[in-house]
Image 1: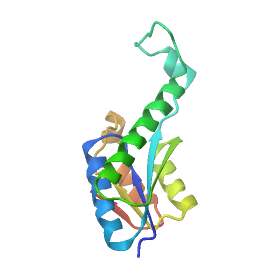
Image 2: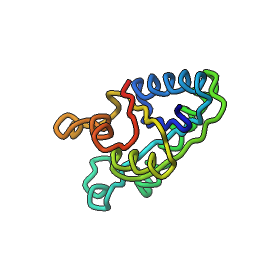
Image 3: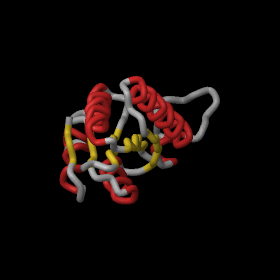
Image 4: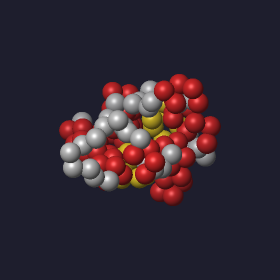
Length: 145
């Protein structure tokens, strides 16, 4: 039924609930779980306007990529601790909803599972949540938890 399940994670409780449900589905279908964390690219202008001034400045994209990687590793461990067998993790940069949908298509996901509310900023409240955008853009079924 669901050969490949894509779970988008951002470290939020909603993302963990989505992952937990995906693990349960995997137990019934024998699916492969693909865990994806998308981080947003920050321009040099945005970085220069930041009020945070570390003593040793580093590339903000590198920091975001590293954080996203730790979110994926934590999610993989959570999934495996809850009985998941086939789990792979990925990190991508881009606009979250479009990147999730594009990745699902690229990997042949037969289901996308997302949390209803993640760690998005105020933009999510004004322009619509990532989960809402994914449901309207995806070509495969989307389960919002």
